[in-house]
Image (cartoon, helix red, strand yellow):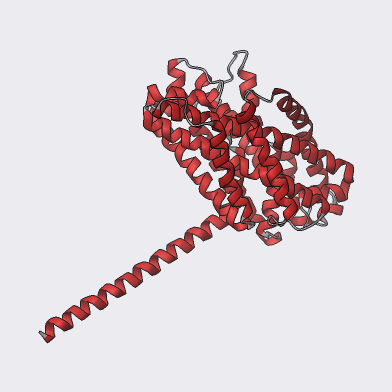
Length: 416
């Protein structure tokens, strides 16, 4: 009896030791995961900003009409975006000032204000359009699955804004960076899974990657859309604030470069997966894409309910990952211009976020498309992006901004 008690005690002790070891391993894995997310957080933020509902529509349209033959244009636009991100990061790190502050000090307040107005015009258009597309996708999908009219766009907009408002109201840069990482990871997973669910096979996929320049009249518009959704000025400008919040200095230039390479590589892979999903379903059926909702309608009969649900989840994650940076960019730009700390828990900052978020109810409330606002935004964007590139070239080659750290020749060539 004593031997049995002793053995029971030994087993109990061994079990407790095993539980402690497992708990320690779990904590270690959690810490390593958080450290990894922290290390690539700025890159994930950029991915989420670039791949929004507009990007989903453009990639799906390219895949539905031209297969994977325009992958070269996507790769080229990702490469150019990488150059811009590295250039903006270098200005921020070497000068010790964020981008708008650098522009104001070097070129004056007028030019800085013009760029801020141009960026905010894009932000206003984006939040209206992105929420309009996202709520429409949720309504259509819920109608297909459950019948009836589907979930009200107003209800969807309220839920999405409540979630994003919670991230902003926490007021911690690290907290919403981790929240953004989770949303981006979900988005990337959904689009990649959809590609594997609907594409015919690896051999056909490789064959479809043969570069081509379509001669159809709409090909140039599709190419412009691929570039416009990837090389967006608001996305690259955000990089300056992410680098500043990360606290990167001169010793971190290589780390910043690795982060930029990783972020644009993943951007390319996820965007290509969206293109491949459309190429595997809509191209063979000859179904064009006009809106993101067309993909959801088409996947149901061609690829099944699972593919539709996964793709819909990816679109919603893409919408959230684009809306969130748009909410905070305005306060960041204002703080940058006035050279004050970027405190997300400040009352005026939260008020600015509420004002931008309120614009997302325009389409759910009134319907339609804000065509005039979109046209005005695009007209300004065609000036802002080239202007930003010129200013970056000047600042990176000026001792007044970067001191003795002159720009590498390769980066100058890339900007040109």
